[in-house]
Image 1 (cartoon, rainbow, N blue to C red):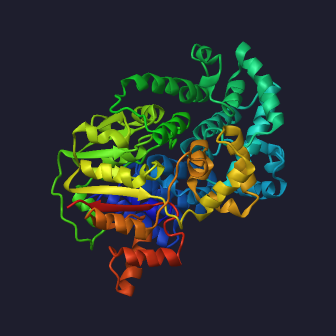
Image 2 (image 1 turned 30 degrees about the vertical axis):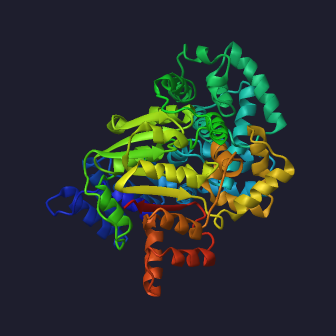
Image 3 (image 1 turned 90 degrees about the vertical axis):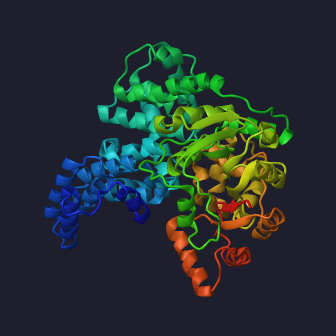
Length: 570
């Protein structure tokens, strides 16, 4: 884990109190670590975990000690447990990849080999000394496969090659070991989560067609797992029959992911109210895109989120900003506009005390996914509904907070949508806005030209082909976006039916015209601290948008994701 991840894990830690045995043992273990007394440190961490088994920081620290001792297999198990307890750690995917290579050097060697051999699909025996069995049972590898989409080109290629080899074995009706079958199932989950974005060869298509005949007759567990690596099981004509048989636990988990849960989402669609008509042409096109590709597809939401009052949250974000406290800690009404698949709405409900959310989106597919994924502890505080921002003024409601962090830049006229939302914001209320930066998305704009020139369409086949072609050009820089690595997110990034971008001067002009108070930009804490230091050393105010424009002009990738900022209505 990096520093950000450790902070998340540490939130589970007990308060420093000498009378607290966990606190005392943590101090003892850290001291042993500093003195390189690994055996003593490991014993102390194990005692901590016997008292507090779900203490993520202790799992991670024990894993580091075990890794220093050369006990890679056991270290992998504790790293995996830490990631499971603090899934938001996977937001820093590169760190997770580096950890895997540290505990599983064979995987790092395979990355190097495939870097030379790609685009051929070498066999597992060519990639790993000892073949697939070398890696199939590694706990951290299995955890990464099932917990988040792969966000690394090298890792993607290794899994693409392994998938092809497993398909070939399944087509020959080969019998895998238990570990290999489990690995195949976790790889199938990965492929479902990234919506089958991995490239596919004609040879694989032919083998899959042959395997489909087996599935309609008497499918084996291995055949089901192999098929699920290439297409969602719910799309098979024999999907219902899969529910009628008893399967090994790993295969049954895949069937739950790919048949039972999609059926739940289909059933949930009828329970979602329609607040407004959707008759605007652009809104209809955007809805169609997200019906086909709900965005974003996610696996696990954050855990261990500490709730605080909205004023305290903003004060932590912008300690020097001169905003007027809202002063509400209960009955806080929030509009989550363009909520998509609900991950951010759920986080808001967990993070801000006393909230009640109305989460609105154009896409029923996205809303049904969100509703299924919403944890029970916040489900009663989030109402999901279908509607168009352009028509929300007819609701006759107002809100203390409005979140517009992923929606305005997909409207025909973002400023019109922004104005409509402001009419729903109560005096003194806060608004969270996200908009695409013209400077920050330079390579995205260039990629759109590349796509238009070559005639790629927003189909799965063309998106797969486009992704591979881009990797052979300077546009490979796009891999810095997490969105590059799943089908729905890549479509959103490069093939969206409607995207607009803006600049800080344009944002400043709009804020002034609407008489709004700029509170501050939102960054991860370490990045924000760097900017605080820069602005303090330069004698600037963090609320000075002219200075921010100077920073972005000098460092064009500052807002390569989005401008994300908070405002207050007078």
